[in-house]
Image (cartoon, rainbow, N blue to C red):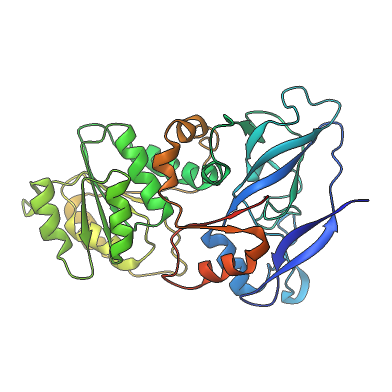
Length: 350
């Protein structure tokens, strides 16, 4: 039987490239040759731990044991084989994948399968549920942004921001910048991005932000007053006329800045992962009657974004800071594990 290479977690902060059997699709499955796969912060979390304390179906392992798991939940590739019962796909189709649709567990996030390998089995291959077909003209590295851009899209959908709104996005990583693109594509009037890294702010302007704030040296509330005009909180105190605050940074200071800066009825959408409980200023929330909205994953957006990414491929492509060949995949993960070394790393395959 043919073999293939696959990336798994190794010791803490390390990967292993292993040889495994190349999957054989059943009658309802498809086999995809991976052409590109992004690396995500979730991958980094698994690498820091050196594995996962749960089995492929989400059950805790005994005695605090860790299981090595295959990585990669942002794959794009080309169909090379389909099962006899699959009618909507054919060899040669370019596809992106819904990692949460696999019966054997979430692809690359604790399930039995991973997208950071030469081939990926699509179990129960159904267009619109487990895979989506996209135009051949879209570069595979851009197609591999489909999953994180679905996360961004859900965040923007949750915000309900419209053309007349003014928005600030904290955190100019891929999710925050994806939110900027979706906000501008839906006609939002003015979008500001705040971050502490100059190169990220440059990318924010390149993908369509109307203004940026270097929050390491600038007074964020004062700059928002300049950019968005004057509003007031429930006590009549002067506040920026910002309608929506998006936390794509995952820091308590961002949440508290939004709470203390918000005008009456403003919204805060939290899409970033906060890794531990943190104190927030509830009193400030009361003074603004701010609405706090959580945004998790992509309940319906995974393929809602696909054709729009294809249409605006050049714009989304600006989010990729590094393209690294699979032959140098260890370096790709080193970049991602090193703070400040890369913004978005995509591994490419021959």
